[in-house]
Image 1 (cartoon, helix red, strand yellow):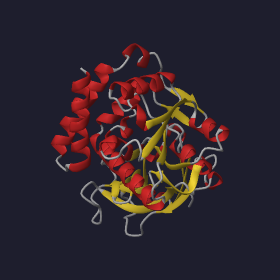
Image 2: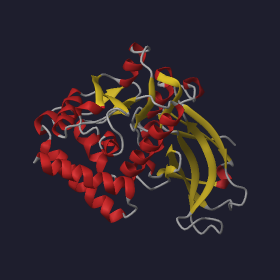
Image 3: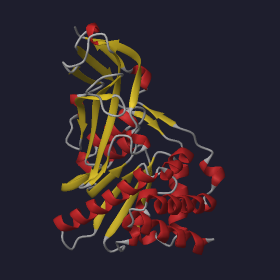
Length: 327
């Protein structure tokens, strides 16, 4: 089984890193997922459920593992991580690149294909997860694959607590993918904004940028796209330099309805997400589960008012979203 696991990791790494054939990527990633699943301690993984924190839900180990099957997300994040490591090498020639992987899940998914390119002398991972089951299973998978020299430390802790208690730690790269569409539910925003003290001065955070925008879903509008959407604009950008007090504890933004919209034409408000993982590696709206558009159920008309105020807690429940007509 272990030889088969290593074979499928190599095959999936080739598909992720070197191929643009979506079918090859899907098949190779699915085969690797099945191998990882078979090699895992299922009773341990299934013993832990979602963990609720003040900053959002941390997915149960079994759900975190399933994220691997979102092919576009996996490919773009792995390629982005490789790009970030290469840039860190350019900034720190001759140094071993230290990487903190926050929210690694039970497979440490994003770190595995990276080992096909770099040696243990090039990179070292610290993997972090709030669930003991994820950490123990990731350690098992890494051992079975013979990759232990790539991993410096395994930490079971809430990422935000780790940031607060390990200020002496400094990393070249920090990567986390702990988010849902429009930054609902999960703690991506809190982790991103509070990770800065653990980055070196020239350190890189992955993903580089997450942008939430607004569109209108309309019907019979001349200037709408093929999906009946009219772009309005961006309402929030999240980077490692975003200050928590710019949205704490809620994201608050105003937007105006485009002037060309007819007064009696009904429309819904759509939140869209775009992620710049690193460099050219971008997840556009709808390309992955985490960039799926969020269409709000209530319908409006322009005569209700041309200005709207949106408010919701990043990492909170979508039910807490509030839309107010300003005028």
